[in-house]
Amino acid sequence: MAVIKIEHLSKSFGRNQVLKDVNFQVDKGEVVCLIGSSGSGKSTLLRCINLLETPSGGQIIYKGEDILDEKHNIQEYRTHLGMVFQQFNLFNNHNVLSNCTVGQIKVLKRSKKEAEETALKYLKIVGMDQFVNAKPRQLSGGQKQRVAIARALSMNPDVMLFDEPTSALDPEMVGEVLKVMRQLADAGNTMLIVTHEMEFAKEVADRVVFMDKGIIVEEGPPSQVLVNPQHDRTKEFLKRTLK
Image (cartoon, rainbow, N blue to C red; front, side, top):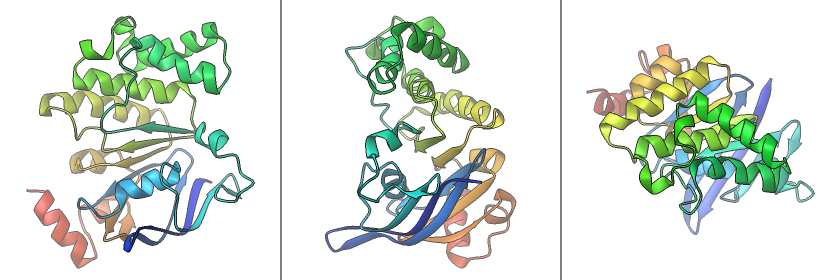
C-alpha cells in the first residue's frame, strides 16, 4: 500500500525545469534509495514531497488525498513526515533532549513528560541517550546526525525522508550513521533516502530509483539497478561511482 504517491510531478526554478513529469510511489515498510549525479533532481524531489519547495505541477497523494489541493492542511501533513537534512539543522541553544521534545510539544501537543519519554526511547535506539544534556556544539557530526534522526523519529512519522544524511560527515563518522539507518530499515520503517552510498543502497534498499536531468531513468531492486542496469545512462553513472 502506497504511503506517498507522486503523479506527473514537475518543478521549475525560473526557466530551469528541475523535475519533469516524475511518477513513483513509496509503499508502507519500503526502503527506497534515490541515486543520481548532483543536479539530477533528487533533493528537489524530496523537498517537494515535504513541501519545502512548492511543485510547479502534478499531484502528491497521501492517504488517498492530493495534498497540493488548497483545502489540505500542509502543516498537519508535514507532521507525518520525518526529515533528516545534510546539515543536521539542530537548535544550537537547546540541549539534545530539548531538540527532540520541542517539536512534539509544540506541534503534536504532547505533554512534556510524554515528549521526554518518547525522545529518550529514540535517543537510546540511535545510541545518544547518554548525551541528553549536551549542546550540539559539544557533539561530533555523526552524533549530531544521530540526534537529528532521533528527533525525526520522535514525531512518529509515517515515512522518514533522508537528504544525503552522510554527505557532510567525515568518513569515519559515516559508518555510525549508516548503522543506525540499517537498524531503522530492519525494524520496518518506511524510508526514502537520497544517497551517494552505493554499498548501503545495495544492502538496505528494497528499490533503487536512478534519476538524471529531472526524470526517473530506471528503477527496480538493487540487484537489477546497481548490478545489472538496463539503461546506458545508469551504466555510465555506476561506472564512475562504483570504482
